[in-house]
Length: 178
Image 1 (tube, rainbow, N blue to C red):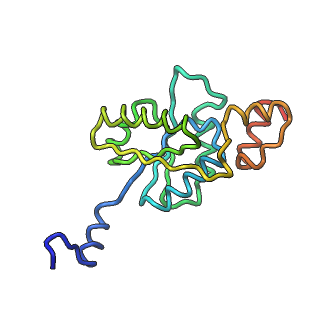
Image 2: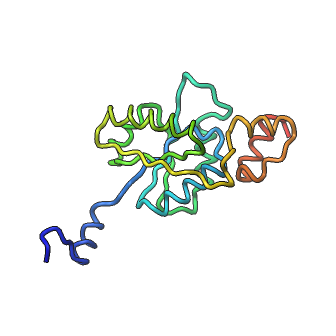
Image 3: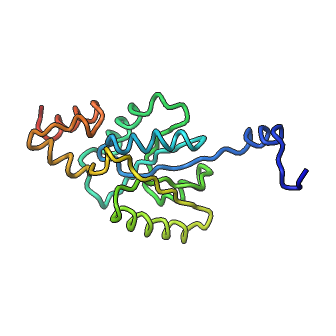
């Protein structure tokens, strides 16, 4: 047996103590079907997925942090390996707090890639143990931007294919009073 070969028994023991945990940070203002697609796919790859909703007092949001937390929590309640958190500090600090080394980000196009690549370099500069995994969106969610979804709701457009029903209701209530 090669000195680096791990037999099945030792692998099972190893997996009991070492789980691959990833973070999926974002504002999720509001959560979209594109976000949910990334969550589903990442939750199937990683043992644990921590959704980290950013709380940035310098940014303006449509929904308060607690509202975004409640929406996201209800959307992932059937995932046994996904948890939702609010966080108002650096994502690398959260990663250290929960013992995660991987940050998952969804990308739609080249512009997203450039932005996410720059963020990954910043995060890696802050903590060299952090790796960023970029997951390309499924084609059906390619054009989903929360700003466009909000605008569509304000003019009475149908966003039912872009956001989960609970989010659609919250958007209509907040933006149109319906």
